[in-house]
Length: 191
Image (cartoon, rainbow, N blue to C red; front, top):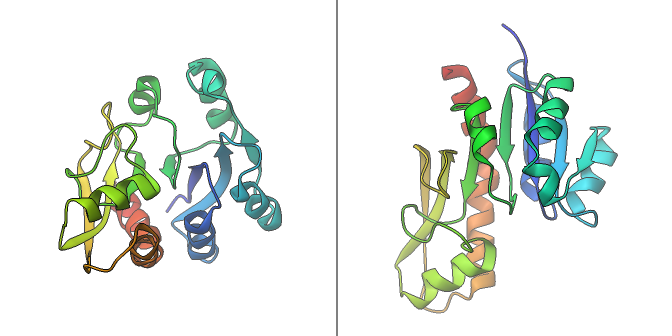
C-alpha cells in the first residue's frame, strides 16, 4: 500500500496539527509531509520545526495563485490536504485539483454555525447565545462553499447553561483531539 503524503494547512497554535503528526508518526497509511500556514507568527510553525517537517508561509495572494500553490504541492507529492484551523477559504482550483482529498474540521455541528466568519470563539459564542443544548465537531470534505462539503463524522458534547466560549472551546478541543486523526486515516483508507 502506498503511503499517502499529507499537507496540513493551519493558521494557529497547532494543537490539532500536533495530534495529527503524533498519530501518523507510526502509521503506514500516511505521512505528514508539509505544513502550510498563512501567519508567520503561528505556533504551528514551531511544531513543524520541532518535528522536522518542512513548512511554508503563504499570503492570501499566493493562495489564490494556482500555479504557485499547485507547484509546491506537486513538489512535495501531496495526496491529501488537511485543514486544521486554517482561516482562509480554499480556492476553487484546489478543490478541483484535490477532489474529495481535502478534509476540514469545524468546531460546531454543521450545517448550523458554519460559513464565513464562523470559526473559533465566534462559533462558540453563537452556540451559547442561541442557548443550544449541544455542540460538537464536524469533520467534512471541502467543496467550493464554506462548510458545505459532505460530512464524514460528527461528534457531540453538551452545552451547559454556565458554559463560556472558553469552556465550550475546551470541550470541542477534546473531541477534535480524540477524533480528527483517526477519521482522516479512515477517509484515506476508503478512497
